[in-house]
Length: 91
Image (cartoon, rainbow, N blue to C red; front, side, top):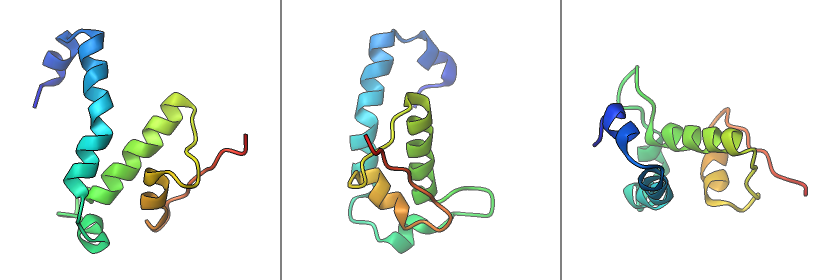
């Protein structure tokens, strides 16, 4: 894994290419795991895998000013997390 400094040295094209792989990489990492496993926190300080994925979804939506459709993978996945809200576009 690159350090922040190494990542910053990459060209914009390299950084964008990495970002485009993120969704598929995350989907592969959690494929076949139960909700119980994905919701389990490893310790008192760290988030569960599900919380991490939902945080990434929320951050991406806010950064891009885009709201997923009700049927998007991340919305359906995060909808079952207690205290998580999802917003859908009406346009």
